[in-house]
Every structure is written in structure tokens, then in C-alpha cells.
Image (cartoon, rainbow, N blue to C red; front, side, top):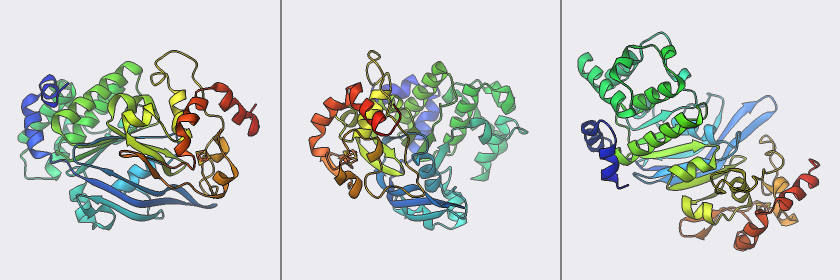
Length: 365
Ligand code: SF4
């Protein structure tokens, strides 16, 4: 579907035109970002030297298992980490480093330049206020807008996300999970941000609602041209929605590039394993193959490749030295010492016996 057709297919076309004019897509550059949590046992290196870019209008997916650092990365971009977290590097939004902003600059930037759709919509809405009032308050906190004008904008936003305006009068507990998530999307769009980050926005929803929300987010992205980052543990969701993707493992980027290229010809064994583990990627037939084992401790991560313990192709070289993220094709990079042999590894990674050997090696079979 063309961008224009997508815009026409989405309800609230007049508002979309307005959003498209006002929401200037931003460029995000994350540069050598580290974000460590302080614990009694030491720092947890949840995000460790991560760099990537989102160009204006891009739709980027970030995928990885639970605990790989995805949500910490999002919180670091938004400066939502606890005060005792160690954060280093740069997060540049149209060239301005978010990590160096004053509290006032940060307040002006959040929601107007970048907004967040979270995992748990229920926690994002105040249970004691009507949903409409919360949206009106968000609009009026950032500009000279009358209550009636703000309410009208909230009505249009609800229309855009497929909710009837009468629902603005309701409290969050009167909404279903899918409706709450739609309300959060409306809230995230209401100040016309140039970058929208969605962190596991559909995880708690049933499959049909999840599909509707994903479709709605995709159409809104196409219509308003904002830059988007979609964070998920489900690689098949990335395959359906994102133009480019980043694969994270144990706090690091292990592969990134155009979604089609990364999924058709993954060059990192972890991505090969993820591809085996989701039905839509495998075409719905054939047996799914899990990656045996679990990620390493991020308090004291291994000094070589962090995937080595679970990797069927690991050698002493992998355990001794960390593989750098290096180019393997146009816009496509992978952090594997044997990325140049990826074609052969991909064939072997399709076999269940390959991963069964890992389970035996690490004592799980
Ligand atoms: S560097 Fe070695 S252990 Fe790491 S993914 Fe590549 S082959 Fe596997």
C-alpha cells in the first residue's frame, strides 16, 4: 500500500494531514551507549556499547529475548533510568544529546519530539481520572490551548486509533486491554512527536487484538511519517511491521540491517536460532527449534562472544575475543567471527540436531 493510500485508509484523514504537517520526523543517533544498573552484587551491564541510527521516517524494530537490554535501552533514550544507574555515551535527537539536556529541555522534548508507548498501558493511565481528561491535560501542559480545543483534539485522536469519542468519558478500568492500548497510542500521538517508541505494546493482548493494534500502528506510521522504533521479543512481529531491524543479545547488538536481508540471510547464529523459533518466520510448517540455554550473567559477562555458550559453532577464538560488529552487506552488519561463512552456518542452523548438540554440551539433555 502506498503512503497516500494508507493515509486514506486510516480514519481521521483530516487530522492525519494536520499531523503530517506538524510532526516533523526526527533523526535519532544512539552512540556507544552504556547503561548499567547498580546492584549489591555489582553493575548489571544491561546495555553495553550500543550504537544505531534511525533516519527520519524510518520504522526500526529491536528484537531479543527478555533480559537482553531492550527495555533498558528505551529507558536510557528517554532518561527514565534510576539515578544510581551508570549511563555513558550519547543519544542525539536531531543532533542534540538527550543525555546532556537540562530538566526543562527534557520536559519540552518528551512527548513533543519523542513519545513512548509502553508495555503496560494500565500503568500509563491514572486510574482516578477520566481518560479524556488525561489526554486534555497532556495537551494543555505543552501549549496554550483551551479546554474545548484540547477535548476536540482528543476526540480526533480517538477516531484515529479506532475508539468512539464517548469513551473519553470513561475511566481506565472501564476499558478492555486493547482499548487501553489504543488510548495510550492516542496519548502518545497527541503532541505530534517526530519519534514514537513502542516497547512491547501488544505483549499482554490476545492475538486478534495484537494484530489490530500492530496494523493500526503501522498505518499511523505510514500516514504521519514519524520515525518509529518497535521493541519486541517476537521476531515474527518485526518481520510483519518493520523496514529495518536490530537484534540484541546480552546487552549488545549482534546483528542489524534491512529486515528482509537480515531475516532471509542472517549472518549471526543467534538470529539464525531466533528465526527457527517463531512460526511465521518458518512459514507455519515444520517443527520450531528453540535455542537451548539462557543468556549469560550481565554482572560478569564472558570476555569473548556473549553467545558462545549457546552457539553451535563456537570455537576457542569465540571464547577468547569479542567479535566486532562488522559489515556483511549493504547496511547489514553482524558481530560474529565467522560471519564470512554464514551461508554454510545457515544450512547447519536449520537442523534440530545442530541445536541438540548444544543442549548436550551445556548439560540440558
Ligand atoms: S563469534 Fe563464535 S560463538 Fe559468537 S556467534 Fe559467532 S560463531 Fe557463535
